[in-house]
Image 1 (tube, each protein chain N blue to C red):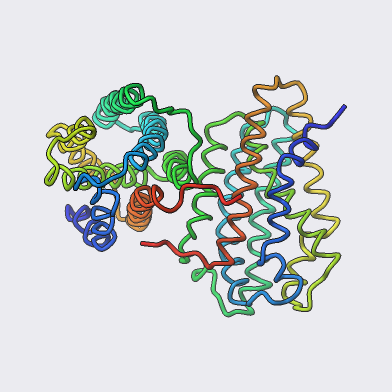
Image 2: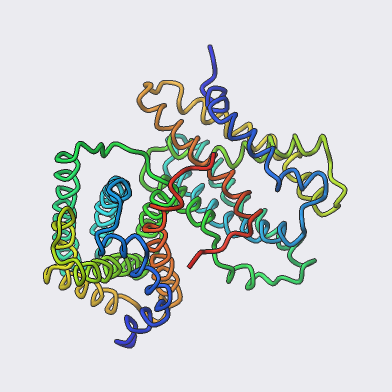
Length: 221
Length: 214
């Protein structure tokens, strides 16, 4: 029988192709991405990860099994650790203090994406929260694997790519895919449709997040 | 907290506020130049937004620390439900479907409201509520000044410029004042500005940000 998570992935294939084809992602591997654009991205990503950690903590609170609660509580911590690692490995090099990062306003796409995650995590049942958080895990893994094959002439970008192409990261993502598979196994189609809807929406937000960085998006007013 | 907090917020947001209340959408609407399909598009999206607003109020009611706040918000939830009937009646009369997907701006703004009600401080959430309602009051008062209660907009104009609505906006402002402590100030300011930006974007999306790019 077909896995539900495979079906989820197939539903976003056009979005994933658009992400791989995006000039930001292309620029990471051919080295043409301006470093200032990359810096914009990493700062926004650090802000994003703080809210992603909150979202995962809410997922942990809603988890119907202790093992899943522990998994997401741990991942909430990991998101914050990764956020701090970004500070150590990139921000120090750029002379950015944690206060500078914290004082940076959320770009429009980032505020919309993180608000959507928090709202779904607060309002909706566990399996729908999984649908909303899964694209961030999964798309980064797939993008990481894809970029690892092509590499990058810029050592800074290579360091970033290596994080998400690592076997360690792969295990994290596989665990969440497995939880999603189990948590949705007995659901009627009507409830699976809602999981799918969140999965597609946050996948779109993933594309918007890259695009926002590429344009160094600011508020129009 | 000083009683000038509300003035400070409006002062800081002034350029943004002006661009919002003078947005081409409102200008065209006020001069009778707005094409009907643009208005219908706004009706469909704002209907979704008011629905999210009821959920937002429900979250705040659950968090309200006293009877005064709880009662006022409960009355508002009923008033929001009444607002929805204006949209529903218009849609029925004009054969307009209200079963549409939210645009990126509509979903972003609605999610921002709900995320703030869920994980922000009560003061932050009230800053969002006051910002959104004050923006509506100011925008529609501007429309009323040049258009009066002209159709097909009369019920919306009446609703958002009525003395009752003005009193509600003032009431929310007072709740914001008595809830905000010195510790909340930065977050309140940021929430108010984000709300004002989203209000601008909401009018603007009718022209420019209607579709999901992927």
